[in-house]
Length: 257
Image (tube, rainbow, N blue to C red; front, side, top):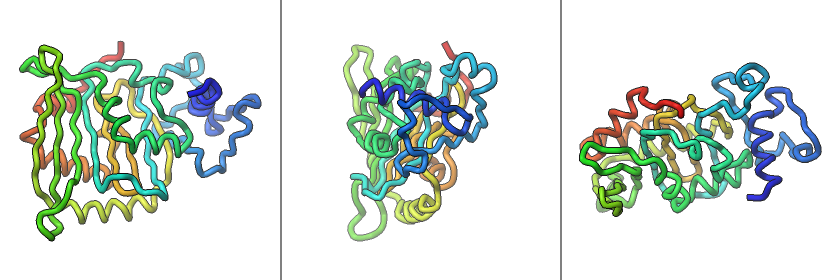
């Protein structure tokens, strides 16, 4: 990523027109009406003109969250990544360390790339009681039962063993996901693209990829059919996902350091 783009991302995220900032020629070329420029949704009403943000714009320790819809198809009918953050690594919450942008095409391509997500989700493993460390889980729709609409869903869980070797567990289950995906598609037709910040010191992160949509958020910020899809997966695989995932996710255990 070149220096100009890095500066562009930083400046436009923290000092967008929503907070009344104007800058020099480096960002004046950006057309706010360009459909490729994402809007800052600011659902938490962050005011960067007031303390503590006016003196330190990097005070925010939340994850960048995205809701994106594209005219082009992703490679997946349904793919979801999830992990709980036992400790917050500043490289995770600092947007300068993420291959994301206020530009839609760059961000959509990154968040719909399984190889990129495999790397992103391998950060900050969760320590388990059995001395293993849980990296992340991902669930994908891999086909159908015979010719019915019952989906075959594949859960992959990734762990680091005590000897620092990788362990993968794979589970298959069948469930009707088609109706929910249809509902999800039509719901997202009405939504606006944009980015936002999660709460400070987030407990987890989730990425949901469907036909034309990508959502990347903290689980408690998921809404509508995004939340329904997440809850669908959690309920279906509740006995396979490490119980520590649910324990840590549901507690305010993370402290900023």
